[in-house]
Image 1 (cartoon, rainbow, N blue to C red):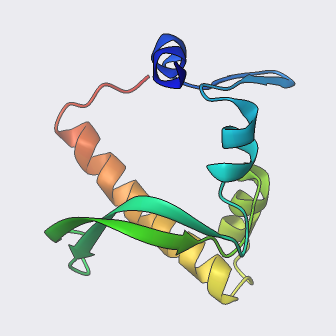
Image 2: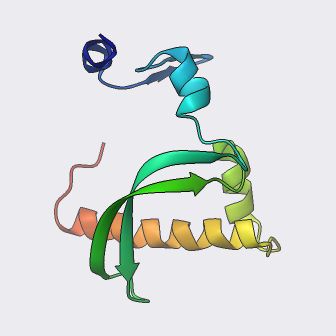
Length: 115
């Protein structure tokens, strides 16, 4: 039944001051939610990349992940934008943002649809 309901909804929808979740509240707000410092079971894609962001190997695995922090989009962006932020979390966010920019630009060069 949950699979059929999730398929019907297709994705979570974000509106101003409201969110319509694809999955039931206990899943989206607890069991499947990434919370700082808590371990979660996951399926992970592991990429090995060169320094110039070329993927040289890919593997898929069941994993246990632990988020370092629960950040809002605004809080994450503030850490990325803060040139003086040199703590480990901020440096990691900046590195991931740089990688994302390279991958996004490559997708655009290959003709990806941009909405």
